[in-house]
Image (cartoon, rainbow, N blue to C red; front, top):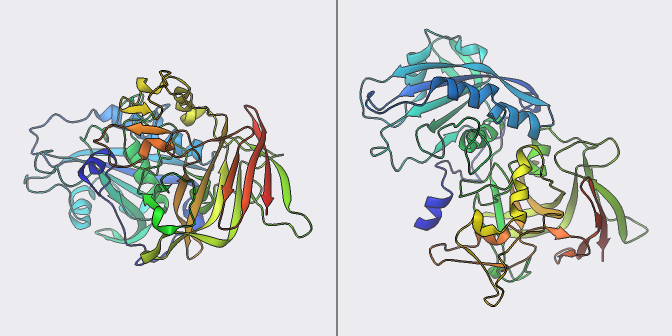
Length: 426
């Protein structure tokens, strides 16, 4: 990963996809998540701290809090409760974070460690000393912890609190629309999400059957909280692939469509992604007989397509800003047609299509497809096509073609509530 990309979308936590064990239970991801937020000052008290009240509001109570985001993206199935503890001071300025034993010994006098599902450690650090440690990391779901009060199962997340992209802001961080997108991202891992929200990139094509033309852009889907940081996030909801894995989308809300036996096409209405409907699915899943290779040497393949119709509401309301001249938000984007003097805008009245990589039956990583390849250009300091996916919408009358299985997805009609689709199995 080149330096420019590290500056743009860096999270310190990465994982080896072939070396994990899955112990997550769906009962851990539904309902109340009892959370202890622990404030630890590792700077020696010489750097001004974040406001205690703002941290509390940004985590639990505020309109743009992590709690309100989890409630919305889970369709009210999951929420966060708890309180903030601290500040705790570490006597030596020699660390950027503490190990579990050090943390539990520091805080045990103030709380029952066995009563919480989630521990969030917010470290106030010396940024010069800790410049290379990244924003944060988390366990994937609950793990067994050995505390001075006994053994327990909980997740543990740590973030470097006083980085500007991490520090909570009330009501919200201006570039993300949530009090802290880094904390919300790590909460996704704490709930059990093993991977990220990536881009699938094939240069001039949306999908190429020549595997050498394609690659993945890690944690770069700017429409999902499970991507990394950037100048701007257009939407925050997790992908349907991750929502299904967390138990937030049942078979009623996520419609699985397979090739019919007696015909080659299906007409279906798709509800908007932010709401649940009794009559229409909020996402569509299409299993693929022929998997799409992503990273051959690691045996990473896309085995399912997911169709989502995102609309500008709730934590996805910033989608509307894409319909304005993009230089208001993305100063380094230029129109690929040098003769076109019109500032680029995006038609958001369309569906997004993602692929899902699965392991052991669980969605690991989602991949947003670029349905309008090479539509935007960039200044030279960016070495990859992050922003080329900002217009990745299949709009009315357009067709998305998946060449490995010869599936066509056409948008017949669309309004603010639903999209009418025709799925053709050639």
